[in-house]
Amino acid sequence: MLSLPSKAKVSGSQERRRPVFWDIGIAPVMWPALGFFLVFAIWEVVVRFSKLPEFILPSPIVVLEMVYEQRALLWEHSLVTLGEILVGFFLSIVVGFPIAVIIAFSRTLERMLYPLLVVSQAVPKVAVAPLFLIWFGFGQTLNALLALLVAVFPVIINSALGLTEINPDLVRLGRVMGGNSWRIFWKIRFQTALPSIFAGLKLSITLATIGAVVGELVAGQSGLGYLSQFAASQLQTIRTFACIAVLSFWGVVLFYCVVFIERLAIQWKPRATS
Amino acid sequence: MSGLSDVQGVAVMDTTPHIRLKGLSRTFQSRKGDVEALGPINLKIEAGSFVSILGPSGCGKSTLLSIMAGLDTPTSGEILINGNPLQGPNSSAGVVFQKDLLLDWRSSLDNVLLQLEMRGKDVRPYVDRAQKLLDMVGVGSFAGSYPAQLSGGMRQRVAICRALVHSPTLLLMDEPFGALDAITREQITIDVARITAECSMTVVFVTHSIEEAVFLGDRVIVMSARPGTIADDIQINLPRPRAEWPRGEHVFDDYVKRAREALVRGGAYAQLAI
Image (cartoon, rainbow over all chains, first blue to last red; front, side, top):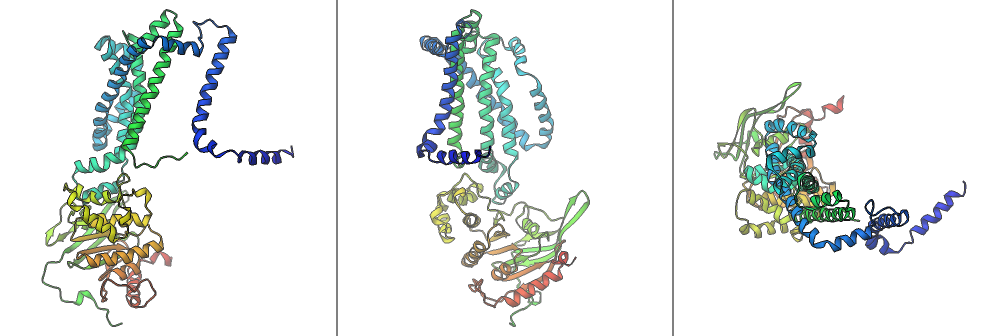
């Protein structure tokens, strides 16, 4: 027991002798990559040694082979799903942002709408899908609307928060400069709210993906969600996995598209240094 | 020092004063009832003069400045600017607040130009003037830098340029150096003395520093503790800009002494006696 502290000291000084590139260049990419690699390696090993049938758990390599083999089909259905996600996402901005502005500017409307919004969040939106099916019928419209329904809430809440949480002195400054409400809104308030708005958009794009896929699962005739469901119903597990892999890929791509736009819009924000 | 004289005794010029306060008072509503913050105050400020308003914390001096900026309205009495009642924000003024209130997403130059954008004016004809002002306060080489890259003193210098870029006839400064360290504060005070002497305009400078008030002003209005009324009105009979301060010369001593006595009389140190 007594010798432990000195041992710790020795290992500590050894750690400090790590090469420089370890900390700055490679480490941030390497650790996550290693994490992914380990999970897939364990998965592969489990499949090989457990002799599980392929329709229960196919190996990741087999899944990747399937993605490659079926790339034309997956691409075709990807376009359908991506279309639904993007339409739902843009609609959630078009619908959500004006509501946020109303909430931010009218105390009365805020009191009226806010509880309504919170209560609406208690409704499991996936459960509304069958109702939407009755109203809007099968197809991409339904799925885009479900994406909108799920994705609009974070846009409203985060935008309203950003627009209201402004330093009142900045508004006073704008007024004494002779600015009207319109100019104060676009040149000061909106810009101040941008980080908060983008926080909402990042949540929203992720949720829009969920909304669109739920629609496809419930009543799809095309799209990756539909394809996955159809394959599963025929016990084509490898194909289902392939759909999930491609969907995840698109989810990540869309999320980083929003991050990229955020970086373009908010260049002044000091970046976190690694 | 026989130069001390009471401005109240001096015959007033027959021209309209730049700012005229008649029986001005301001009361704030709180849960415990009405709180008298200010007044009644009667005051004439001549065009082109530099008036320091000196008073203890909470005496309503910032409220008084807000009223002159048109950002607050008096509960009773009236405020006349060039003989006309002030209605709405006083956009003929330039205002420097205690915080610099620079917009993080704009460079120094663009922050200065915000003054004109808020007025809906074309910015291009003013770029040269903005750059010259930045040069004059010693931050010319930081015109393209963002506020996050500047020190507190540099940021406040940019804010001063923003208040001057539209050539206002009135400059209102509300404890502009309150957030700065002592050395920066002395440097920037000397710069303000020089700049305000170069541009001919009326300056109202709110501070709780006796030395600053006396060094900068043609006239020091000493306010009593809440509700703030005028405890003394001291004419400083020294040519501006003054270079002696803060090098320990004694030309200001009598004025400083008189201002301190007025503060004592006005109850500024009452809390210390308990």
